[in-house]
Image (cartoon, rainbow, N blue to C red; front, top):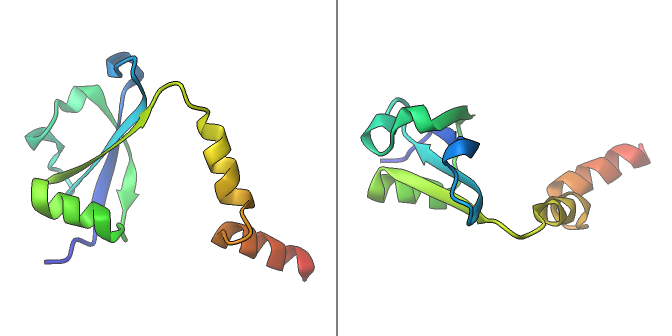
Amino acid sequence: MTIAVLDYFKLKPEFLPASLAMRGVYVRPNELEKFANPSQWEYVGRTYHPNHKQAADVERHGYCNRSLPAGRDWSKVGKAWYDHPASVIAHARDKKASN
């Protein structure tokens, strides 16, 4: 079975351990209660085309957990994504600028 839709939730800051900058979880729609206390999580949105790794984790475990450790400057990661020449976003921006 191919998973086409997942809900994404982010752990509320008051429940976030000091060792993490962010923790998120992807689950099938309306299935957060099976894996976590819904009062500790905030709904971020729905993804209609999850990548194959997220879909495989949800197939295997019922959820896909994503965490970013604290103590790193994650803004540099985002900057690299938007500025790297091979980035789809950078390519679209440069194409638009040249027109």
